Image (cartoon, rainbow, N blue to C red):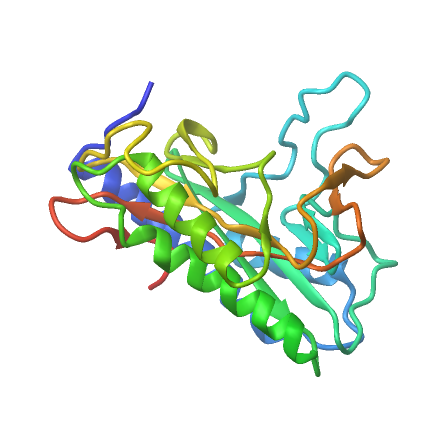
Length: 256
C-alpha cells in the first residue's frame, strides 16, 4: 500500500532528510586516501546524533536466519561492492578507489535516505564517467516523477540512459517508497517499461537510487550475507535521493 504523506508529516520528514544530507557532507569532507571506512561510519553516527537523529540502518534486520542484523551506521561499498558494504577498521581507502556511502537518518518518526559515490584521490577517466552517469541517471529519472505519471516512466528513463552510455543497471535491487518505514511501497526498479506501474500522486515520498555497474550486470552476495559485489569484478556506483511528488515538479528532500 502506498502511503500519502500529510503536510505535517512532510515537514517532519524534511528534517530527517536534511540531516541525511548534512551527514553526507561531513563524510565527503573526510574522504581521502588512508582513511578507514570504519572512521567514516563513526563520523556519520556522530553527525546524526549531533542533530538529534539516529542511524536507521544500524541494527536493521537481514531477514535471513543465519545473517546478523546490520552492524553499522552506514553502508560503505568500495569499488566492486555494489551496495550494503559493512564498514571496517581493516578497509583503508586508497588513491583511485571509489566508495559508495548509503545512509538513512531517522528522526521524529521519519526516515531520510540518500547515497553518494565518492572518488578517492586520482581516479581514472572511465571510473569518473561511471560515477557521473550514475548521478545523471537519477536526474534523468526524476524528469518523469510528476503527478499522473507512473513508476515505470522513472524506471525506463533511468535504465535507458545508463545502457545508452555503455553501463549496466542492477536488476535485483531497486528504489522504494520511504516514510515512517525505511522501505515502503512502491518498489522503483532502475529499468522497465514506460506507462507501467503505480501512478504518481502528490504526497508520495520516494527513494530513487540508480545502481550502475561498469561491466556486466551479474552480482554475487558476500559471505557476510550483506555485501553485494559485481560478478566480473568491475566497479559499481550508487546515487540516491529521497524525493517528494508535488502538484508540479518533484522536490528533492536530501539536497538542501
